[in-house]
Length: 383
Ligand code: HMG
Image: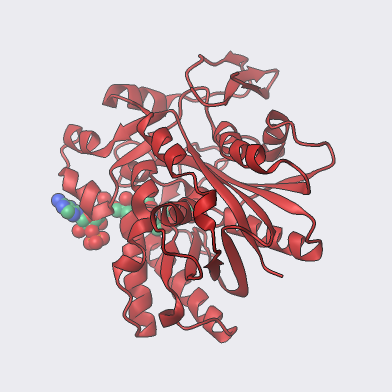
């Protein structure tokens, strides 16, 4: 029996910041962002959006297409959680009208959280192949203004339906894993922005990749030359280029960027979506390449702090029927640009949980964050 990703959908925030404009306004050569980092734009949430509204919007089309039969688990992965205790998945569960008979939980380990959720989902389905699991990865990546991290912000969500006999990607059983306590990137409880040691984060990412690769090989994984396409976590797309080059050097196998180029299309536009980034890369690859049926994709998930996992999947025949390229393209194109001053003002906005709040109605998405009442976050459908 094969188990894997049956369907997946991408969603993002209402606003967009053009990185060429940000560069020009701050005296940076736009080529540094576009070529040096490999990023064009970054999504930015409106005041009535957050990880819950984006996550629910990503999951909605999956339920519309497949119904809720067999779904007994919602796993919500994020590192920009809206509560220290309650899973963001519970807000989504209510917004989507999912059945009461459901286990719901939140996963956290920086950008790696979605892969932890996916691997757990595979285990749940292996135990009972009649069950299906809804995995949601949703994040708002935020750094301080005027720091090197600023052009690598972003926002977005990916929802995946994990099942037996998947229509998109059958995940193979061998995985290579890596873990090491390293202070490359983290977000203290009292901070809305991440603390990052940029240089260390690059080497920690590349180190986790080689450790995970060696573990993958030792566990009986296929050779690098037997992998047809690569899809890596993309904090900025240039990072994936560095990673593939590093893997080629490590394995001695020639691995050109044509093996991963198609994975960049959405992430160049979204910016870093932390937990969702790897799977937005996968969505872009499947959406853009019609020739993938039967091919093997190698995926590398990295989460600062730091954990990595390398695993593979086989693209299923007929995967083209499941795709949602037009929807993603339309959502990206429909984002409303922010001027630099509007962006900076929104960036500085913080919602103190102790004060009641009603948010302005801005998002065109199906769900919105309506505000805070008696310290509890309120969400509603927009239609
Ligand atoms: P920086 O200091 O601004 O950039 O920080 P730089 O000076 O190193 O330049 C970046 C690249 O642009 C370089 O290319 C330059 O040569 C090039 P490289 O040598 O690296 O190939 N460049 C130009 N190219 C063309 N025309 C020009 C030009 N000027 C320069 N005119 C840094 C870059 C990534 C460190 C910063 O943006 C940062 O701190 N970002 C946040 C941390 C991050 O994304 N780390 C990635 C690995 S960790 C990770 O993936 C986990 C994460 O997603 C979080 C999680 O797990 O939860 C972040």
